[in-house]
Structure formats: C-alpha cells, structure tokens
Length: 259
Image 1 (cartoon, rainbow, N blue to C red):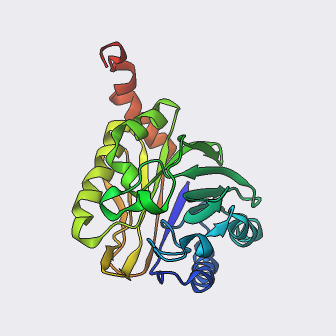
Image 2: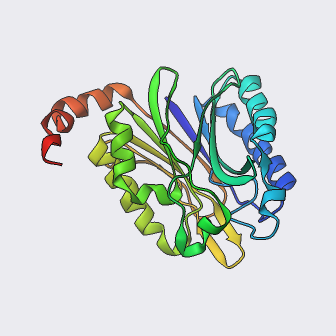
C-alpha cells in the first residue's frame, strides 16, 4: 500500500480557498500513483475559527462527498480526507471521512478527544465511537490529533485487526517532538504502520509544525516532511508487518485478564 500525505498550509476561515487548494494538491499528487492520499485535520476551516464556525462548516459532509469523493472516483484512488469542521443535527463535529477508489464514503469518524487547552470542547461536539475500515483489503484505523495521546484508542483498534493507523492533525510546532514520540510509540506497541499527516503554517497565534511522517511497526521513519507545505510517500508492506508480528508475538503474549 503506497500512502501519500498532503501536508497543507491552509487559511483560517477561508473554506472555498482551502477546498480549491486541496483539490490542486490532489491533482498533482495522483501523478505518483498512490494507493491512498491522506489530508490533514480541519483542512476546510483551519483549527479553528471561533466566530461563525457553524456557518463555515460543511453541511453534514455534503461538500466533501461531492468534491473529494468525485476526485477519488475520477483518479481511482483511496482518500483519507483528513477531517473537516462538519455541521450535523445543529452541532459541529470534527469529522474524518474516508473514500474508496469508487468515491464511496466507506467510513466517518468524529474526533472523540477534544483538545480542552484550546477550548475545542466549547466549539465542537465529541464523537461517541471509534472507527475502523478496510481499504484495498487492508484493515485500517484513524485518530485525529489529540486522540493519539490516548493509547487505549489505538490499542482498541489494534485488537480489531488494524494494520495501518492514519493520524490527521493540526499539531503545533512547539510540541512536534512530542507528536513524533507518540506516533512511534503507537506504531511499536500496536505493531502497525502509522501514517501521520499534519498541517503547517500559521493560524491565529499558532504555528503548526508540519513534519508529516510514515513510521513502520518497529518505529523506523520511512518518510518525513519538512516544516512547510510538502508531499511525502512511503510503502506499507504487509509481509513485513506479518513477519514482525510473528517474531515478537505481543498480541499472543498479552495478559488481558490482568488489565
């Protein structure tokens, strides 16, 4: 599975401009024939305009389905469409949407852990379930930004058979080392590939760190972006994953009855 992360510099609150920009990035990235394209967190609005967030949000994901889903179908590529600010039933969610090669939305996930230090819980509603899905026959999971600090989430997905974890984020530059440490830990402890697509640039007072990455199940970095807008790719090899799990059988050896 060849994965490609589109590390995007978005403009806070400029939804149409952001849509056009992400479409341009997709048009360029498909030339390298990836199996999966990955977008960052809340790429439609940025993270996050506190005035008129509901008005700027997608309406039940309709615009993402129409525009990003059609590109998935046009190019025959899977798209983990990051997350978007998404108005549903009168509430705004931080929603990830996943499209298969036919442009069908095969999964949606609302961010479950909202970042209280920035007041995300005052503007968004938390999700109430985790999300696993299958792309090209490979079991995948997704986490959004702050979610990655909670190992229970990724372990739950791993116990459902996850081989690849997609992490989409708007992670600030000042804590980027923490992000990479967490990503490597989640990869190693769950023996899974971790594909992380972060944003970059400045929104309000926050500088986002970029440095999107792909990490293999033993913690090796397969691809790493810089701090500005960038596109990176790597291959997630399922035979290597099988060999790693056979050599160090942590899921067989775990003592679930003790914890």
